[in-house]
Amino acid sequence: MTRQRLFELIQSRASYLCVGLDTDAEKIPAFLRDQFPDPLWEFNRRIIDATRPYCVAYKPNLAFYEALGTAGWELLEKTVRYIGPDHFIIADAKRGDIGNTSRLYAKAFFEQLPCDAVTVAPYMGQDSVTPFLGFPGKWVILLALTSNPGSADFQFAQQPEGIPLYRKVARQAMQWAGPDELMFVVGATHPEDLRQLRQEAPDYFFLVPGVGAQGGDLNAISQAGLHAGGGLLVNASRSILYASSGPDFAEAAAAEAQALQLEMQQILEGKGGGEVAK
Image 1 (tube, helix red, strand yellow):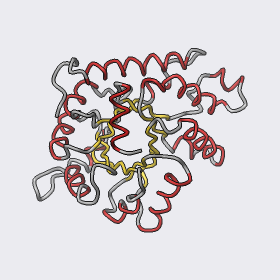
Image 2: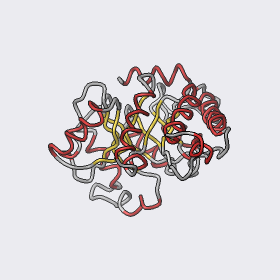
Image 3: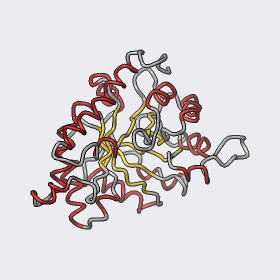
């Protein structure tokens, strides 16, 4: 998917919501396990159908699929193909290796699966990232500043340039690729840091996890990170997927997604408590 197409989806749906498909066999409603031969697929299918109108992206977290072995890979492929081309599909794989290994990871997600983007860890440097680049319409989403408490262990380490490590990562990565094929992960629990990074990377998309169950504030991160055409993909997973444990789980997921979409619509229209960042 091109950057222009992603902008168009955000504007037409008045949403920059990404639904994280962290499908946990232990958390899906019990009746699915009792009534369906493939309960995880039934769960994913209903969640996707319920939330399609309110989001522009889906993000399967590969750990939840890989842990299931062959059946998990089959579920992943079935899921991403069901999502289809009208939503941006992110393989949340957090891969990080070099040379041919990274190139084969890229082929797995971009050629064998119809994913638009893959999350990549930058710790090994440029030659662990560039093999993922150069696939037309495909994206690298580079881990820069994550939302977990352990992000403080390394990501805020001060560098000789007088900036924290996550900003050095972003500065360096912007020399490898432009905003048509590179995004950054920036956690919702760091709105002021997100604002600083937006100043340094005004044209790049940010994937922002941490809204919902992790406590990130949608309005705060939107005011810090949105630009005129969008520029954010805000992910919510557990708060949508597990909004209900009963037979109404899909309806509850739709309600949660719609509530976020309506808040996003207000923000995009400039009514969310301040002027959207340019």
